[in-house]
Image (cartoon, rainbow, N blue to C red; front, side):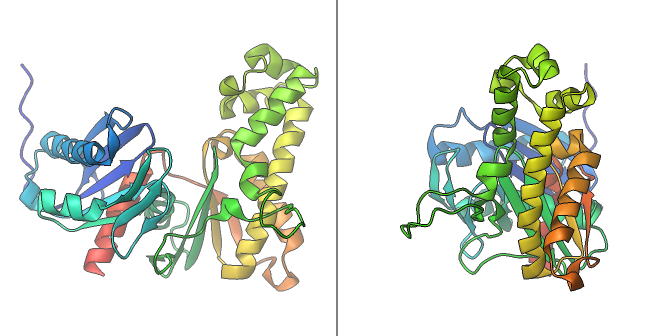
Length: 329
């Protein structure tokens, strides 16, 4: 028979990550120590109404795991995919979930009689790095997370950079090679050229052409099997073409970073995601070199680029921390 968990008496903050396939809730104390957690599948929810109900259920399970009552909640922070409206607390669009104009703050606030605060999920991860990770002590920090797409966020003087009506820092949509017909369509963006999906596609092509024998042996030409770890192993095994593909993508990302430096002049840029974790030295050094080569001379020594320090579910801590910052000031 399992021993009943002791009730925690202090105040708590809820962090929530609304992922494309899974939702995660964590209960934190004031020192951001995890008291309890719960996870559910997102995809089983049929529509936004069912999804909101499942979010509340997940929070209830996390509270039960922590031995905490709802009245102890000081705030609920939610990291949401896609653009959000920080003024109204609404998810404007979450394409992976099929959600539009979903009032997350209102629903959770009423469900738990506590203030709820939403932010973009990448913003939550960046704020976590600013509070407890690789961007500690920075005045202006930018986080960039190349994955299936390219997510980014920024913190200046302890506050997330957000637009008046929408979350921002959609770095992946910076045009790199725009078509020139003037119709606003076509061309290429940073995300299209630098995402892990693009790298995996180019790597599969290289394997098919016999230019990456180690990757071919490990994965064949199936893109779904070409993970960050497999790419790193292929580079380590001597597949120079795979290293060249990653180097090109990181160089192009450095071009985007140069644009960010000219706009915001951050003192710290944090790179995260599976590819950075798998190949930190190659990826970070390439982005740094490309960015330094493309900024004005005065900016070349004004910033550092480092790998993220926190684990994958750090976004829940960042969401809780941002809720606390918003509520307490």
